[in-house]
Image 1 (cartoon, each protein chain N blue to C red):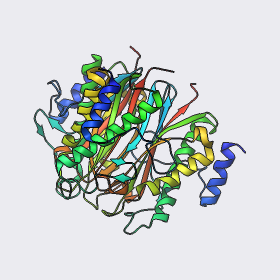
Image 2 (image 1 turned 120 degrees about the horizontal axis):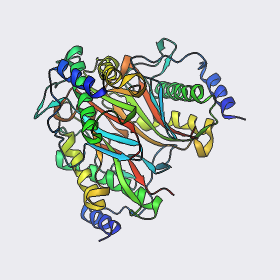
Image 3 (image 1 turned 180 degrees about the vertical axis):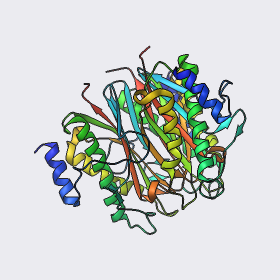
Image 4 (image 1 turned 45 degrees about the vertical axis):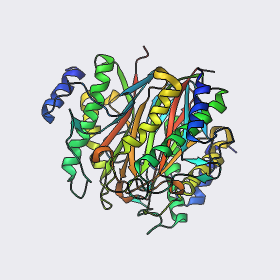
Length: 159
Length: 159
Length: 159
């Protein structure tokens, strides 16, 4: 099965479509490219105009809901790469993901939230291209009170 | 008008000069370069020896004041690039900026703070080189209680 | 003295060995490589199965203890590079380190925590390869309640 098909399957399982235009706020661009590196802007779990997972994880938001949020963030990042590259096939690797979790002071499972995004990268892109380095931290707030934000750096075939 | 002239104009509008040596604390360097990529260290709104915007945004610090802080951070980053490259002209693009906002627990306008930096990049470098990816998060504290910190990765002509 | 010998000396001074396998949690890899860049995942001060410096710096954890935590984080990152490259000699430079300090709301010495890591990079890798850009921020929590987390981007000879 192709990466694009696995992406579609994962989107269906989440119950969201990532085919629409992906809006970002503010005066910047979804991704930049230099040589073989692509930098994708921080993604929050927004579906069309609504941020669907908001609030502090470990307080209002339980772990499983935060993992859903992380899944939407990484699917948005992949959708942006797919749109820019025409397909997910040109991705040679995911160099790094940064996972920012809006955390209650006592919440220490940022890695478990991030695992939801990591698992999707591996299942959609495969063990080679999907293997990535990762940094997960707990922050006090995020734009629009999103529970999770994820950015990434990808390697693509030089164009 | 050249980028360097637009930089000077923006500095005049802010009411600060970025011609002096830009001090950074600690045992590291303002920027590093590898191939066509330049990494600029996190900049706080310091003017000479004084951090001019401090405190939690949304509590002691209103949005407009935080946006001023973000403007100073990005001007410092550009000043460091200008000094290192001799001018802003060799900048091919800004790959990414990271915007860290010292946030009150209920403050969710990190993007609006970051927009001040994004607007300056676009107005000084132009729509092509100034277009950048961005990640904005709310943190509990920053060095010297700065209200904002910004770092960036730029692409420059290989030297 | 070689970099690897200086690394061993620094480990001895800290009182920890970094020769064992370095475990990371979750579904990702310790480092990725693309061209001349290596991205190392966020490291917390874990020794074997135990995170040895936990809690909020400025509250439960004093500055000196947090600096010890930062030292362990950067030694782990170097140990991962050493294992992957066979030695620390192929490192051409450290482009950037990101230092995340679990901070009490009033703790503003994130730079002083990060200096412990910066000093080790310079003393082990030397003034040229050890010189790095840096971003230090204060976060509300970290995985497993670690007091510090550090990630980095290194430049290595293209293989």
